[in-house]
Picture 1 (tube, rainbow, N blue to C red):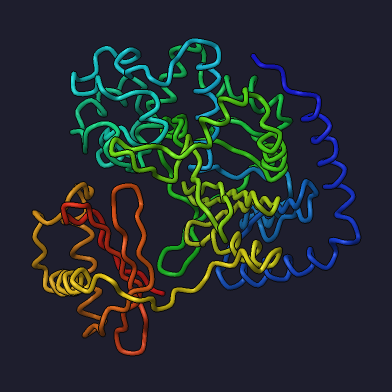
Picture 2 (picture 1 turned 90 degrees about the vertical axis):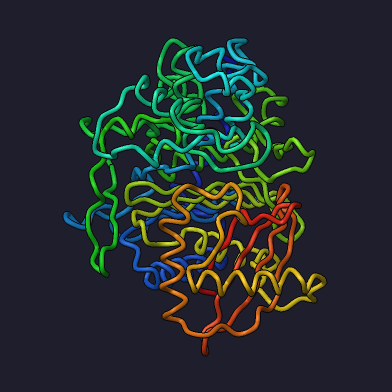
Length: 468
């Protein structure tokens, strides 16, 4: 185990002091503006409870809970209220893996068949790195799992082995919870204990994340929030799932706002791992073509206003979360929600724009269309979607449920919306090997966003419609 530096302990002490004593007077106005926005956004989104943390240049500007952690008992959210991580937990799974790499038990270039010798022969080209970067091509086990059934690690492996590979390893990025389930099982095997124990002793404890832990249905856990969903406009308790699903490494953690502020200090100091490991974690993946995709090991690696933005979102069992680091502005934002119908990104983006208006997400607006032939094709695709005449042969790498589930939904939506106006190009960018075009399109008086992604050979990898 790599000993944490003394600076982490010092930062943790400073964090506690700031949480107890509040920001300096110079930050009062900023904090008040952020709080006013958070309260308004909470009301607009009808969020039962949330915790918000804002760190600017190492100083905690805001750390506060809003609303209720439990509606039935009217328990308010505090800074030590525990929320489920969702996929924000993936960055911690990546830490557990890299601790095994530094200990010499795992190599990123290892074929995963070294650890899963009974896997299909088609898995031999898949490496540990591919799993970490969502480029393995392993099929989604959640398509076939019964969320109310218990599964062992062996069960998960057998189900994964039976799923067809979606593409050759390294060919493209495809977000995969299954890959991180496999990484957790891998750590369980090589560490001789569960990945949760690895995190507890080598990440949570040294980083002073004093209440972070794995999810448990049976343990009595102080300050645990309840998760909520909205069904036909009515708030309901989250649906029950099998406890075995909450042992997986794709996002099965509890943490509080205090924990995440301590984690932010550790990330800022590049603690717990060597600098080389952190560099691997925070480097965008290279696809087989040589094109890069903005994802590292459990981190989305994007840009805002021409400066790095490292973040991840999470969603699971009535909880939503986002952790964003705007590196060029020394700004970190944590938002933890106990509702599955809210949008944590709207909170984080709104707060960032208050701290620095240059970080506001620019509204989509018309831009010159240099490829009108593409636009004509995408116009035809939209009408085929309306008429239910899309040709699956024109598509590549879409999920198995896209045509039986998504296409009928869009068909009904388009028929309700009525005739579409002309497509107005608002954004066109390369993302990995895909060319992604985003249009504004009017249906009557309402404007929608229409997004289409295509490969160099012209096949469609994504087609979607969303309210603007």
